[in-house]
Amino acid sequence: MCEPQTRAADDPDRPPKRTPPDPDPSGPPNPGGLPLLGNVHELASDALDFYERRAATHGGVVRYDVFDTESYLVSDPAAIRRVLVDDHDRYEKGEMPRSRLGGLLGGGLFLAEGDDWREQRTAMRSAFFRERVAEYGGPMVDHARRTAASWDDGDVVDACDAATDYAFAVLAESLLGSDVERERETVRAAAESVTERFDTRRVTSFLPEWVPTPANRRYRRRVAALRSTIRTLVAERRAAGPPANPAAASDLLGTLVAAAEVGAMDDDRLVDNAVTFLFAGHETSALGLTYTLYCLAHSPAFQERVRNEVAALGADPEPTDLRECPALTAAVDEALRLYPPVHSFFREPTEPVTLGGYRVPAGVVVTLSPWTVHRDERWWDDPTAYRPERWLSDGATGPVHGDETPGPAVGERPEYAYFPFGGGPRHCIGMRFARQELRLATATLLRRLRLEPVTTDLSVRASANTRPAGPVRVRVHTLDESPGATESPDTS
Image 1 (cartoon, rainbow, N blue to C red):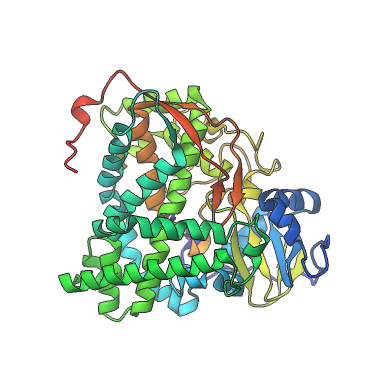
Image 2 (tube, one colour):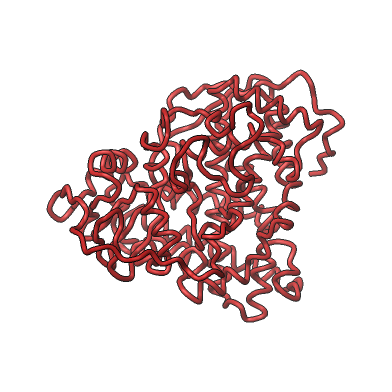
């Protein structure tokens, strides 16, 4: 889930800025791989480490192969901007994401192209307007209060499990309706199979979905159950009477149903998009919150700084308060830099293009890796360290970037040295929602709890997202001073 305030260069209504063609250079470095396998064995060993080593050794554009699929890892921020912004109309999501994710996401917004994509995005954009997202702040804070209240002093909790439950509850109430709560087990089983299906440590994850491996069979069965569940929810919404138009809906599912009723999308696209937001919406937010809590547990001084900042508000924060919380914003932005929930974005050039001074042919996979760029010492001092102070100006009077358009931290570096939510016209539509959720949840929890690390060495793996390889345990200590009058009664 993911949408920043559109920058001028990212506005899809503006004519694209076309970069002048470069002279016809040679292709990018090709370090080679094994016959037939290409670099699959290296990716299966540790895909994130492979990306980092490939970029460090061979530069900002370098080739790798997955079986017979020619691929190019792009870690040069200027080239990334060229793909996502300047020349975005020369790229599409491509065959690889469609073949790997089509069974899950269908033809929804994430995989749609051209006019189909524009029509779908227009149909649902009202659900993510600034004013609408601000209305979701109440459920975000309420569910964080309930999470904190469920823990006793000294409890050791798995931050990832807790964050997943929290994000699902928020998504259900805010975007897809409380009826989806009863389907939590169906969603959990599908998410588990998606993680297993795309876990790059398994060589079989690079095989097509139709290959009848045990993981693929479970994946197909559970995704089919998830899609059936969504169809049932849609039927119930229709029976209750859909909104007159998408803008009149009170949540995203209502927006989608209304869009289908007025002919803006068919029922298949409706289900595709509901599945997309149900899976991607709570997975990426949950991971972002997991990594923020883990990092703050290991940074007690900055944790206290954030706590003091939000305590000064006198109550749990509302969306309008977030601009007054630069340390809170820095804590989240730095966690997303160090552990971006989406480790890679993929594009496919529809014609030969030039990237980083190299000629790249049409029809290949172009991999844009936030994980690699965010940890590149060319752009970041001490890149593997969690240092939220880097996002604050001298004197800590506030972040140097705007609240809705996170840019580089203090210092000179290219714009796309930081892009945890993509960029350009196809930036993720829910980023405003996700960033608000992460900050409100973190602030609400820290007003009630002090976090200590239990898991001391976080290991992550590349699956559909950047996932922890095991539990992410923190110890929670309840604070002596209760927010008291700032609480709203729990009527659940």
